[in-house]
Image (cartoon, rainbow, N blue to C red; front, side, top):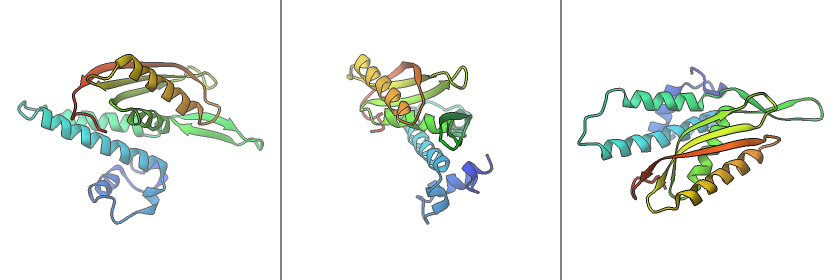
Length: 186
């Protein structure tokens, strides 16, 4: 990924920008949706990796743990395929990238108290078919799991369908973990 979103900046450039606290400001990066999605993902992964290190400080970590996290970040936030949104009267096709939809789904989870979003998958059997969404989450201990999953499912459906002519089919949410207070991002 030598040129993120046509910005002229590489993944390494974005990482350095984030490490500097996004200063001095680089308008090309700040206005680029793919760059912003990747930076948000890097921030989220940074928080998660710091939590893992703190939680498992007594246990030796495998050398590959950081590489595995970064592979997942890159898989999710490269632009991915274009998903048609709508066609304008002049025949122009409007699209949204798969990576942008991953960020929309993650932002839904970020807005629900007690939820940490893990892996996100989007499947579409054919270009006009509804999108099927699969999400793995962790729910804060003490929160009602069914109610939290229903909020997440409804939020994903509304957020995606708000972006044009996209239709959502299945929204499968797997609660793969229950975390304790202090492990929550929000």
